[in-house]
Amino acid sequence: NRQAWLKHSRGHFFAPSLFPPFLHSLNLKMASQGASLQNYNNELVQSIEDLRQKREEVNRQILKEEEDKAKIQKELSILTDRLQSLNGSLIRKTQARNEYDKTIQETEAAYMKILESSQTLLHVLKRETVNLTKKRQGSD
Image (cartoon, rainbow, N blue to C red; front, top):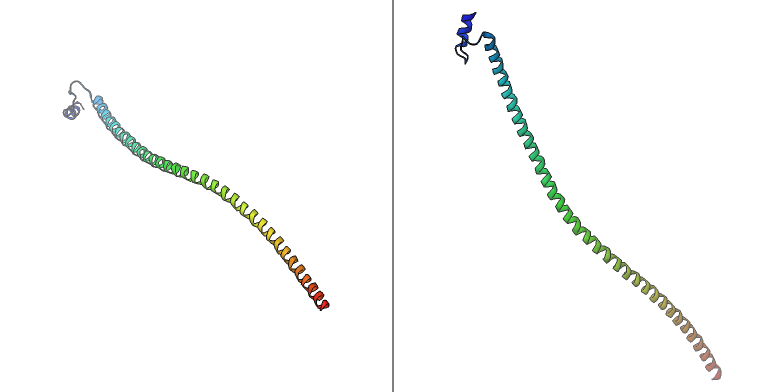
Protein backbone atom coordinates (compact mmCIF):
# COMPACT_ATOMS: atom_id res chain seq x y z
CA ASN A 1 0.00 0.00 0.00
CA ARG A 2 2.83 2.33 0.90
CA GLN A 3 4.64 1.48 -2.35
CA ALA A 4 1.54 2.27 -4.36
CA TRP A 5 1.33 5.57 -2.57
CA LEU A 6 4.94 6.33 -3.24
CA LYS A 7 4.58 5.36 -6.87
CA HIS A 8 1.39 7.42 -7.26
CA SER A 9 2.57 10.51 -5.41
CA ARG A 10 5.86 11.03 -7.22
CA GLY A 11 4.25 13.06 -10.01
CA HIS A 12 2.57 15.45 -7.59
CA PHE A 13 3.72 18.34 -5.46
CA PHE A 14 3.89 16.36 -2.25
CA ALA A 15 7.04 14.74 -0.97
CA PRO A 16 6.24 11.05 -0.45
CA SER A 17 7.69 10.94 3.02
CA LEU A 18 5.77 13.99 4.30
CA PHE A 19 2.17 13.34 3.10
CA PRO A 20 0.18 10.20 3.67
CA PRO A 21 -2.33 8.89 1.05
CA PHE A 22 -5.41 10.56 2.59
CA LEU A 23 -3.80 13.95 1.94
CA HIS A 24 -3.33 13.00 -1.67
CA SER A 25 -7.07 12.32 -2.02
CA LEU A 26 -7.72 15.58 -0.17
CA ASN A 27 -5.50 17.33 -2.68
CA LEU A 28 -7.43 15.74 -5.55
CA LYS A 29 -10.70 16.74 -3.90
CA MET A 30 -9.47 20.31 -3.49
CA ALA A 31 -8.29 20.35 -7.09
CA SER A 32 -11.73 19.15 -8.16
CA GLN A 33 -13.37 21.80 -6.00
CA GLY A 34 -10.99 24.38 -7.46
CA ALA A 35 -12.03 23.33 -10.97
CA SER A 36 -15.68 23.55 -9.92
CA LEU A 37 -15.04 26.97 -8.41
CA GLN A 38 -13.39 28.08 -11.64
CA ASN A 39 -16.41 26.81 -13.60
CA TYR A 40 -18.72 28.69 -11.23
CA ASN A 41 -16.57 31.76 -11.64
CA ASN A 42 -16.70 31.47 -15.44
CA GLU A 43 -20.47 31.04 -15.34
CA LEU A 44 -20.81 33.98 -12.97
CA VAL A 45 -18.69 36.21 -15.21
CA GLN A 46 -20.73 35.10 -18.25
CA SER A 47 -23.99 35.71 -16.39
CA ILE A 48 -22.85 39.20 -15.38
CA GLU A 49 -21.86 39.90 -18.99
CA ASP A 50 -25.26 38.67 -20.21
CA LEU A 51 -26.96 40.95 -17.67
CA ARG A 52 -24.85 43.89 -18.84
CA GLN A 53 -25.83 43.21 -22.45
CA LYS A 54 -29.51 43.03 -21.49
CA ARG A 55 -29.12 46.26 -19.51
CA GLU A 56 -27.53 47.97 -22.51
CA GLU A 57 -30.39 46.82 -24.73
CA VAL A 58 -32.92 48.20 -22.25
CA ASN A 59 -30.88 51.41 -22.03
CA ARG A 60 -30.92 51.75 -25.84
CA GLN A 61 -34.69 51.26 -25.78
CA ILE A 62 -35.03 53.90 -23.05
CA LEU A 63 -32.98 56.40 -25.05
CA LYS A 64 -35.05 55.71 -28.18
CA GLU A 65 -38.31 56.10 -26.28
CA GLU A 66 -37.06 59.32 -24.66
CA GLU A 67 -36.27 60.66 -28.15
CA ASP A 68 -39.73 59.63 -29.34
CA LYS A 69 -41.30 61.24 -26.28
CA ALA A 70 -39.44 64.52 -26.86
CA LYS A 71 -40.47 64.51 -30.52
CA ILE A 72 -44.10 63.85 -29.63
CA GLN A 73 -44.04 66.56 -26.94
CA LYS A 74 -42.73 69.04 -29.52
CA GLU A 75 -45.41 67.98 -32.02
CA LEU A 76 -48.03 68.20 -29.27
CA SER A 77 -46.91 71.73 -28.43
CA ILE A 78 -47.15 72.72 -32.09
CA LEU A 79 -50.57 71.08 -32.41
CA THR A 80 -51.77 72.75 -29.19
CA ASP A 81 -50.73 76.16 -30.54
CA ARG A 82 -52.45 75.40 -33.84
CA LEU A 83 -55.59 74.26 -32.01
CA GLN A 84 -55.70 77.50 -30.01
CA SER A 85 -55.26 79.49 -33.22
CA LEU A 86 -58.06 77.55 -34.93
CA ASN A 87 -60.35 78.00 -31.93
CA GLY A 88 -59.78 81.77 -32.02
CA SER A 89 -60.38 81.84 -35.76
CA LEU A 90 -63.56 79.78 -35.39
CA ILE A 91 -64.89 82.16 -32.72
CA ARG A 92 -64.26 85.21 -34.94
CA LYS A 93 -65.72 83.54 -38.04
CA THR A 94 -68.76 82.27 -36.15
CA GLN A 95 -69.41 85.81 -34.90
CA ALA A 96 -69.03 87.13 -38.45
CA ARG A 97 -71.43 84.46 -39.76
CA ASN A 98 -73.96 85.36 -37.07
CA GLU A 99 -73.69 89.03 -38.08
CA TYR A 100 -74.24 88.04 -41.73
CA ASP A 101 -77.28 85.98 -40.69
CA LYS A 102 -78.70 88.95 -38.77
CA THR A 103 -78.03 91.36 -41.65
CA ILE A 104 -79.59 88.95 -44.15
CA GLN A 105 -82.70 88.51 -41.95
CA GLU A 106 -83.07 92.26 -41.47
CA THR A 107 -82.56 92.91 -45.19
CA GLU A 108 -85.05 90.19 -46.17
CA ALA A 109 -87.59 91.60 -43.70
CA ALA A 110 -87.11 95.11 -45.10
CA TYR A 111 -87.35 93.77 -48.65
CA MET A 112 -90.60 91.97 -47.81
CA LYS A 113 -92.00 95.27 -46.44
CA ILE A 114 -90.93 96.99 -49.64
CA LEU A 115 -92.63 94.25 -51.70
CA GLU A 116 -95.79 94.56 -49.62
CA SER A 117 -95.69 98.34 -49.97
CA SER A 118 -95.06 98.04 -53.72
CA GLN A 119 -97.93 95.58 -54.03
CA THR A 120 -100.20 97.89 -52.03
CA LEU A 121 -99.05 100.87 -54.09
CA LEU A 122 -99.68 98.97 -57.32
CA HIS A 123 -103.13 97.93 -56.10
CA VAL A 124 -103.94 101.52 -55.12
CA LEU A 125 -102.58 102.79 -58.44
CA LYS A 126 -104.71 100.32 -60.42
CA ARG A 127 -107.81 101.22 -58.42
CA GLU A 128 -107.22 104.94 -58.89
CA THR A 129 -106.58 104.37 -62.59
CA VAL A 130 -109.90 102.55 -62.85
CA ASN A 131 -111.64 105.33 -60.91
CA LEU A 132 -110.06 108.03 -63.08
CA THR A 133 -110.98 106.14 -66.21
CA LYS A 134 -114.60 105.84 -65.01
CA LYS A 135 -114.75 109.53 -64.15
CA ARG A 136 -113.34 110.47 -67.49
CA GLN A 137 -115.68 108.26 -69.35
CA GLY A 138 -118.51 109.66 -67.29
CA SER A 139 -117.58 113.23 -68.11
CA ASP A 140 -117.22 112.70 -71.85
